[in-house]
Image 1 (spheres, rainbow, N blue to C red):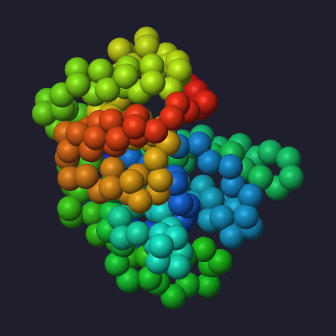
Image 2 (tube, rainbow, N blue to C red):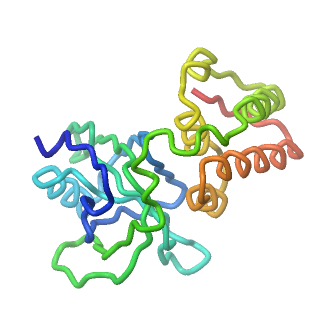
Length: 216
């Protein structure tokens, strides 16, 4: 079935995609992002995706540039879908591959669509790509210090049982950083660079006071 297709090559990915712009929302390959959809234009976008290939793209709006979009986002597949009261949908997007946006298309749909290019991110389709270069011990130690500094808790069984790729990318998604910082994490060329960047951001954040948030 098309909905269960695993992409092996970027040539299999759609060259034109519908985008869901949302500042602060980060999606990375093989991670999951739950979304509450309530605007009519995005309800229509999800409906259209569900009747086609279940693919939509997450990309951040850049508040510093008058709500223009950043140039890099991540394609996702809808892997969970439910309709709820008050004309809302709850969906889960599973990350597939990052992309750079190209020309915006002239469309009749209320949501925006773009031509995109995946060439720079072809390794995103390879599960675990770059894991061997990540200093996992350093990342976990940084996480421990952050949790202690902010009086937070975490499910350590889940951490220990996660692959290195999933650990790095999930911590990036859960991180409390600003959209510009999250965009930098998204655009990191390799998993190792993303991990090092996350560690640096975490160390910098500990110069401020403790947080009251709790990581689930």
